[in-house]
Length: 441
Image (cartoon, rainbow, N blue to C red; front, side, top):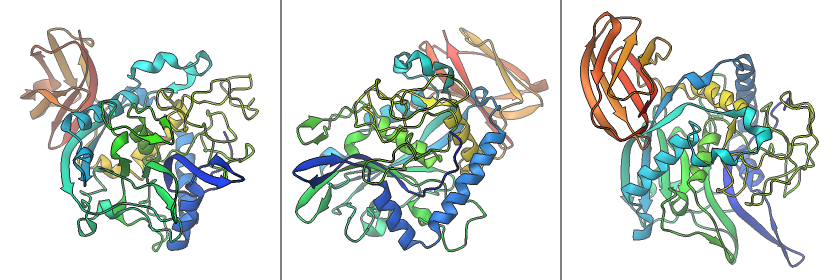
């Protein structure tokens, strides 16, 4: 797509937002309501966010030939479990499972990659982003977290100790994820729908007006309803008589927003229909006239797209994309354009997530053999003394660690007994940091 980004919104992943109209229920997206509230509360927010996305878009276009698949970026994650009833206090196994889902989805290691239709396989992207579970914080609360459609009050109490929640841990350098019960959307006595999660896009570029840096830094991060966290979550979420399939893709979707992505249909819709005028600012994503209805309708082709660059045919709607509102069992990919956008965001307005490591150096390290069996050799372009080495599985669990000197920039070490699979090898000291993906046979 080529149109400039023109809409501001804080992304809310709405499972359904139903209005009673002519005795029928209509599913719509609630982003425009939240956008209007934020722009009213924080004057200049819309203009500032538009300028932020425009700058990211220009840089992403300049970097479109950058081979991000060769790099692995590591983000430390703090998960805040803010719970009232015991069912909301998710077990560590569920949290670890969700981290594994994120690492699969953002490295294209998810088992359902083969479900992508052949037309879209050439543009499927690997973000090379690894999520490291840094800390779990548990907080019992008596508070209820709800968005008011009448006053515009946002449900951010879970983010502050003083409001019954858990205050953020250094949101510049850590991705904070709050897991809690998000109360249903209501107007008066009517229940309209359920928010599954929401996230704020980047807000820390230096060119933002001084009075429009909304939300407050302590609110920056991702909020997920406790029923939608982890694909092994025993809690069930239903809308009406429909039980919703949960595969851990709500956090994948929301972190996409956190890294600057918009919905695949471009969020031009106002109460349900944008007539193909919306745009997500990503050049390789086909347009759509609206969101998917939490299904997997691969016959959906709502807009004419013949100038995408990667195909000469009219591409159908990309319902397999993580940034649609399709069924979580249908979602399985980001595009290369979306990957470029997220990496550009991570190198720019979200670069603080990487600066807790002094030098994030990926280009000067090689490892071999890869795949490996019994041993592995690390080679760098400089001598590194007192270097830490650890191997993590896809949940972020450290299964091996050592301390070595890389004399002449090289060292070979024998691997412990490790189950075959894909792992992250981290090499670091006070002046150097590198992450490489390795396969153990």
